[in-house]
Length: 80
Image 1 (cartoon, helix red, strand yellow):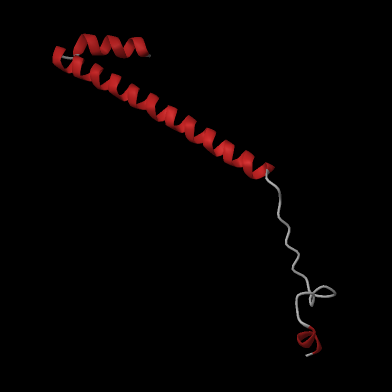
Image 2 (image 1 turned 90 degrees about the horizontal axis):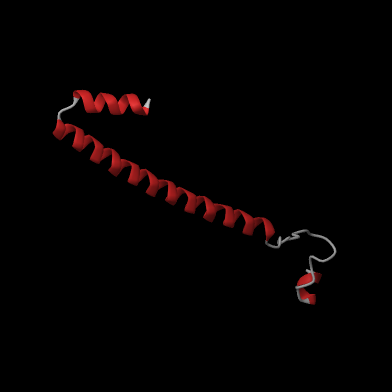
């Protein structure tokens, strides 16, 4: 397909349009490479965050009433 496209461009387009088209294609390829690099960097960052979240210590909060509910209260508050 690439050969066919190049053949079409070379055979039927004027010289000024051909050079402009090829220049634009090169610019777009460079932009695409730049975007791919940026996406790879973002994916690496995301993978690092996910790894960090998976490996960090878990914090468990026990919020229950019962035997230990009055530990931090003064004796007067417990009697009431």
